[in-house]
Length: 388
Image (cartoon, rainbow, N blue to C red):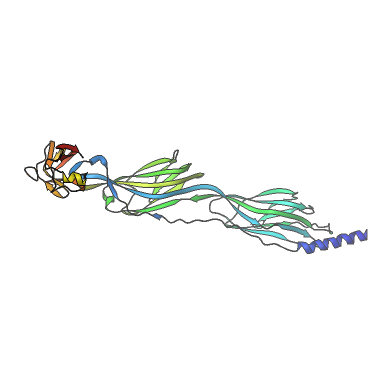
């Protein structure tokens, strides 16, 4: 009996020498991202077709398209894993003890955490104890296999400690748990908003409305859109294209910021643009172009003509017609605006080889609409007309 005790004692001392090596704990850091607003350069303004073909000074609605760029916003649940190296946990009167400590940092959008580990081998001579910030949250004789323990009330900076209770009267061996695949899993919500900045200058003074245009590759859940921190849209987006109509109220003169956010469990990717509509006083001109080849120019007759119709008159006055910057006259170079068809003749002195430009302008504050512009080319050789 005495020899048997000495043999167990010797074996225990050998095991103790092996178990005294303690391994360090490694961490997987949380991914954090800070995104500055993306600046958007100025873009060209365009006139609505509403006043196409009108000539004269008037207040018209124009627009400017601002390509905001790539959209990528989400608010999804994610997992942060803090893992530790495999460890042999032991405790006995003659063998001493060790423990495993894991330091944790709670995420701002923390939902919950748990510790998970595999018991590869154990003699169950003592219970395995798990503490959170010095308080026992679990104590059990864990068997071989996978185990999970919920970690409640994690603070901003917490510590998890795992150790084994002593084997006590079992002097020949310590209580031991061979732990593998040790990790703390924190579930959190990951918010990824996106901001774009752009400038409004004088157009802000007469701004009427704006359209936020979305072309989406991914549209899952509910999207929130803000202009200068004022919410202008919050709803589920059901298709790949979405237009959000916004009035002038949330915009300011100078720098503006549009923010896209996703509601919980939502994700949106694609592209976004902004169309700004505003009023502007413009001196409208009617412009028309036609081409002449070298052969056509050489055979050009004075009988070649330009015809058009004045269909509507809002303000009386006069007008002028120019071809390549040279005024075409008919009795007078500034005829009074009258409804009906008009004809002006051109020749080699006003036309040229290549692109020719006709410009009809208002004189004496006239405002009228031009329709049915037609350019006739008269060939001196064939003595016939061709519409260019």
